[in-house]
Amino acid sequence: MAPVPWKSRFWVGGLLLWLSVGSSGDAPPTPQPKCADFQNANVFEGTDLKVQFLLFVPSNPNCGKLVEGSSDLQNSGFNATLGTKLIIHGFSVLGTKPSWIDKFIRTLLQATNANVIAVDWIYGSTGVYFSAVKNVIKLSLKICLFLNKLLVLGVSESSIHIIGVSLGAHVGGMVGQLFGGQLGQITGLDPAGPEYTSASVEERLDAGDALFVEAIHTDTDNFGIRIPVGHVDYFVNGGQDQPGCPTYFYAGYTYLICDHMRAVHLYISALENSCPLMAFPCDSYKAFLAGHCLDCFNPFLLSCPRIGLVEQGGVKIEPLPKEVKVYLLTTSKAPYCMHHSLVEFHLKELRKKDTNIEVTFLSSNVTFSSKITIPKQQLHGKGIIAHATPQCQINQVKFKFQSSNRVWKKDRTTIIGKFCTALLPVNHREKVICLPEPVNLQASVTASHDLKIACI
Image (cartoon, rainbow, N blue to C red; front, side, top):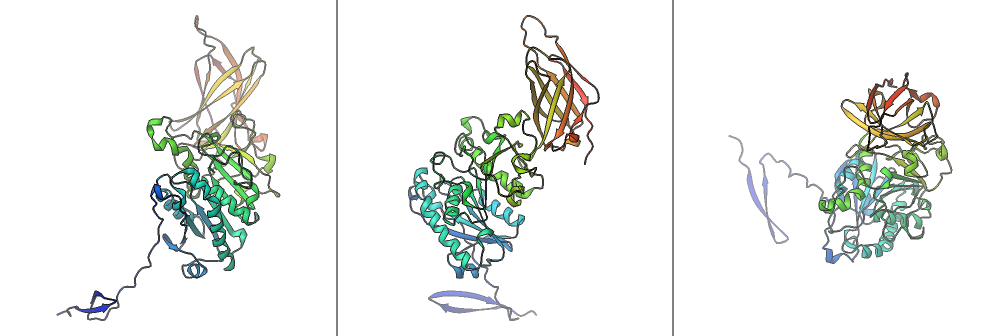
């Protein structure tokens, strides 16, 4: 017969503990370390600043350790030889833990071998936005004191990367300024606009706050800042009205926050996926869509910037230019990345009015469209078309020459021209591929042509 376990009673500190011990003498299980989590604040308690620093390490990405002093850091798995990523959330309407933070931390730890520290300032960031703004300086000082403890442990300033979301981006900027711009990198995910668009560089994120500063703009017409604030500023889909986000107020909170939070989800997706979120410098979004900015020669010497954990965003020149606006198009859902192609149409003869041609790429029953406008008395027009599939998987191109809208009779105007396309960046003219035969188009009639591009 197997031995029967016995139970004995022990009194410890006035508490009766029941301990089951097998007669085989097995030791009791080792207690698991307690994981810390974000605070929850009442909207009426949003003025006090109660800051927590939660450390997450690669060996245990789901368990945060509350760290306050150097001894906490040394006993919690912090590795001073690794880089340190500091995540700072922004204004919290309801005073609850950010819904995106857990996935962000896990993805960051999967993408890079680093210490990840989440700054929990839920108290102080909730309630009224303008009260949260008033806490930015106080919070920045607390973060500086904490980072000084890391430096004592041997961490270098250049190995610290602050990732600030919305209002948190300006907190990161102020922290970087207090360190004399010597922190390694600051990434602003749709830096907050209200109270900051007209602020001085001392009060907001700017290119002088770290060795490399980047910002991803997705809501410049509402909660995000509309001016460039870094070395490289990504204006995704022009910086506003992100695809897939609600366009009507009845969607409620999602309508209000979707564009603003797209920057966070884009960054997470860039960490998770290999397809590049590459952007192109241009004077304006309109000029980009019109095909006037096809490479990254000026000012990046062909090193096109990319969203994600690429050193200096992939920009390989020194010194870094400041406040360069770069543009890219995305899809409506993860992984968001699109390929960008130049599309050109060369008319055989001049026309006395503008010529508008809709160009559509087809691939496996998926379509991607753009419009080319050729101004009157000109022969050449171009534009940018974005497509989720690689260019070599596009098997057909369709054209539709827009009618002049004659009400009294059908428009039978025809045009003849040459169509060409090239994948961006177009660094060499040899990359441009043209259809072998002239394209004949009649107004309002769709014409299809096979498109054969070899995969590289």
